[in-house]
Image (cartoon, one colour):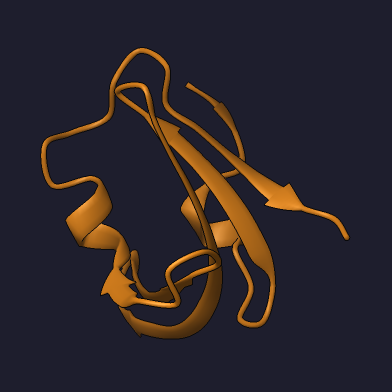
Length: 69
Protein backbone atom coordinates (compact mmCIF):
# COMPACT_ATOMS: atom_id res chain seq x y z
CA UNK A 1 0.00 0.00 0.00
CA UNK A 2 1.37 3.40 -0.92
CA UNK A 3 0.24 6.95 -1.44
CA UNK A 4 -2.05 8.98 0.78
CA UNK A 5 -4.02 7.98 3.85
CA UNK A 6 -7.77 8.56 3.75
CA UNK A 7 -7.44 11.04 6.61
CA UNK A 8 -5.30 13.34 4.45
CA UNK A 9 -7.96 13.69 1.72
CA UNK A 10 -9.61 17.11 1.38
CA UNK A 11 -12.95 18.24 -0.07
CA UNK A 12 -12.58 19.84 -3.50
CA UNK A 13 -9.37 17.98 -4.40
CA UNK A 14 -8.97 15.41 -7.19
CA UNK A 15 -7.57 11.94 -6.57
CA UNK A 16 -6.58 8.75 -8.42
CA UNK A 17 -7.20 5.38 -6.78
CA UNK A 18 -5.78 2.11 -8.05
CA UNK A 19 -7.12 -1.07 -6.46
CA UNK A 20 -7.15 -4.62 -7.87
CA UNK A 21 -6.02 -3.25 -11.25
CA UNK A 22 -8.93 -0.81 -11.53
CA UNK A 23 -8.12 2.90 -11.83
CA UNK A 24 -10.60 5.54 -10.63
CA UNK A 25 -10.20 9.30 -10.84
CA UNK A 26 -12.57 11.42 -8.81
CA UNK A 27 -13.31 14.69 -7.04
CA UNK A 28 -13.95 14.46 -3.31
CA UNK A 29 -17.31 16.21 -2.80
CA UNK A 30 -18.16 15.57 0.84
CA UNK A 31 -17.10 13.68 3.94
CA UNK A 32 -20.13 11.56 4.88
CA UNK A 33 -18.76 9.52 7.78
CA UNK A 34 -15.65 8.20 9.37
CA UNK A 35 -13.43 7.20 6.44
CA UNK A 36 -16.28 7.44 3.92
CA UNK A 37 -16.56 10.08 1.25
CA UNK A 38 -18.94 11.15 -1.50
CA UNK A 39 -17.00 11.15 -4.77
CA UNK A 40 -17.72 12.41 -8.28
CA UNK A 41 -16.10 10.46 -11.11
CA UNK A 42 -14.06 12.77 -13.35
CA UNK A 43 -15.02 10.91 -16.53
CA UNK A 44 -18.62 9.71 -16.13
CA UNK A 45 -19.63 12.45 -13.63
CA UNK A 46 -21.39 9.73 -11.61
CA UNK A 47 -21.43 10.15 -7.82
CA UNK A 48 -20.64 7.25 -5.50
CA UNK A 49 -19.15 6.49 -2.09
CA UNK A 50 -15.54 5.57 -1.38
CA UNK A 51 -16.86 2.51 0.47
CA UNK A 52 -18.24 1.26 -2.88
CA UNK A 53 -14.74 1.38 -4.39
CA UNK A 54 -13.09 -0.55 -1.57
CA UNK A 55 -15.95 -2.86 -0.56
CA UNK A 56 -13.89 -5.94 -1.51
CA UNK A 57 -10.82 -4.83 0.41
CA UNK A 58 -7.51 -3.31 -0.53
CA UNK A 59 -5.41 -5.21 -3.04
CA UNK A 60 -1.63 -5.46 -3.20
CA UNK A 61 -1.65 -2.65 -5.78
CA UNK A 62 -3.76 -0.25 -3.65
CA UNK A 63 -2.57 3.32 -4.21
CA UNK A 64 -4.23 6.68 -3.53
CA UNK A 65 -2.67 9.83 -4.99
CA UNK A 66 -3.75 13.45 -5.39
CA UNK A 67 -4.04 14.68 -8.99
CA UNK A 68 -2.39 18.05 -9.55
CA UNK A 69 -3.68 20.01 -12.54
